[in-house]
Amino acid sequence: MTNYLFTSESVSEGHPDKVADQISDAILDEFLAHDPDSKVACETLVTTGQVVVAGEVKSKAYIDLMDVTRRVINEIGYDRSELKFDGNACGVFSALHEQSADINRGVERADEQEQGAGDQGMMFGYACNETPNYMPLSLDLSHALLRELSAIRREGELMPYLRPDSKSQVTIEYSPDGTPVRIHTIVISTQHDEFIPAEDAESQEKADEMMLEKIRTDVRDILLPRVKAKLPDSVKALFDDKLILHVNPTGKFVIGGPHGDTGLTGRKIIVDTYGGRGAHGGGAFSGKDPSKVDRSAAYAARHIAKNLVAAGVAREALVQVAYAIGVAQPVSLYVNTRGTANVDMTDAEISQHVSKLFDMRPHAIEKRLKLRNPIYQETASFGHMGREPRTVTKTFISKYEPTKTIEVELFTWEKLDAVDAIRNEFGL
Image (cartoon, rainbow, N blue to C red):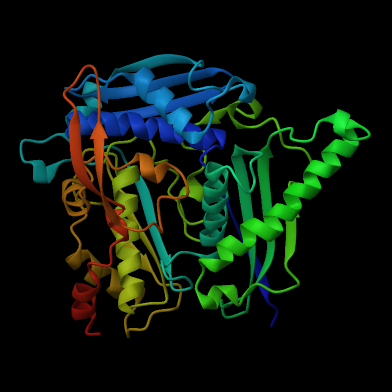
């Protein structure tokens, strides 16, 4: 039997689609901080010198949308005019309006336990045992490369020419039984300053070659060692001298971000989830409050899948849940272990046990995972899944509302807090 290759990609916080996601989620957080019952569906478009925010909102809070938008853009690193997208100077156009009463009628109930799903659709959660955080290795490494590249950029010392927009791609070679054998190919494309002018070289072409060689060398000698140093020994062992490394394969990458490519909320849903290894129902996350099951049920499905694998029920788990708009109980819940189950049960039987353990009504999910808190801006870059749960204190300052300081738990769906209950249920 022959080994096979599988590839996943990631994009940085400065990628135009991720800029849009972060603005949408920052606006959502601002509403939730001042009114936890807010209903928000916020979409953002970013392009050269321009931001358009549109969507539907039902909230008692009034926020300074322009201030929130500019703050996010500046925090990402688009804070000077030479990038052609500057948080201090870009235009911000708002087309937010009140949420449809027809949609709201299907969601809110006198008995909050019977809160209906905000829309129909199917959502998926996935986990596997090839990394400590139960994520596919190809995606986990793709995120790790860009998180470290972002840290180097913000330090401003080792690679001072870096700009915010970047992408990564990692190809893993697997044995026929699905075990990672080696890291086959890494691709890094990073935006950069024009740090070698033509007058310092023989020509613009020569200057471009010199810049590219410097970036290639720094990725190989600075970025990769820093990433490898943070990896477990089992993953470090997958790097070998046959690794194929592509750095800025098209050459120069000065024009980037929203000036180089228009960005839209919700266009990186595979980067946001499982890098193509797990299924996806098609609904984006960012800008949506947790009454939208596109978001909350996807998080709940990941929580189930991760805890199933961690408990030893299977080496891999794909959880699907589906809803009808306005109906609290899901129309279906199914677990697919892809033939890796460690218990003497069919996937249908495993699904029945899972349905007994987890209340998948929308209100129950919101309560269990503490989703009516301002926790979402942090999810909008480097993936919604596989992150480290942690508690942080966030302060929201507004000229329209009292200042709010709130302690919140981030990435609650990544907790392994259901392992004991699952083991008890499955007799493990």
